[in-house]
Length: 219
Image 1 (cartoon, rainbow, N blue to C red):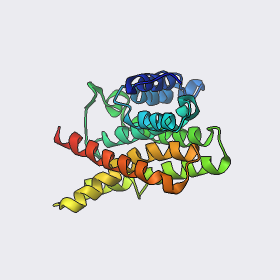
Image 2: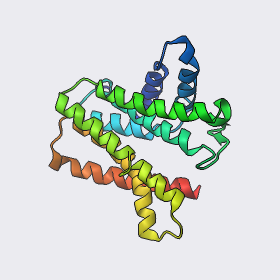
Image 3: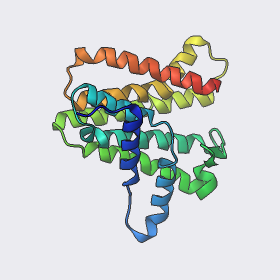
């Protein structure tokens, strides 16, 4: 396969995301617009790029994992839409654009986030592969998103006070590290990589996730 840089992979992700629509029903086009508004607002695409780069490191074409990569970005986007809400971080701007609840209203923003998560699970469940491996991938993504992952980390962030170093590391590991790690693990699962061979990938990805969250907090 031709050599691809992270920028090349990121461009492929953007082109794929651009093709996605979530409803063709006339009375739901506003929801589709709101979901696409946040999904296509740009960003580093770290999670899908990690997934596709891992797939390439295993000798697979990125096309085989584009659905999984898109699902990761949709879950990440859903988390940003909800984090920006007045009940959470109460942000008016993201990436220089009005946040979803400013652009569409709080109710639509909540629904857009809900829709992105549900459509992400549906998309991942529909990827081609051994059924057991696809089921494992869905389980991994849901686990990294829920109470034992991103949502749990956000809960600690909004409720805890006076966190020590270990607690902060746990917060960042759940809120960001789990989804970064699963970006690599999805490619390993769909690529049929044995569990013992996954550990170096998993350790690298988890530490990278913590690093990115700490840098974001500092900046």
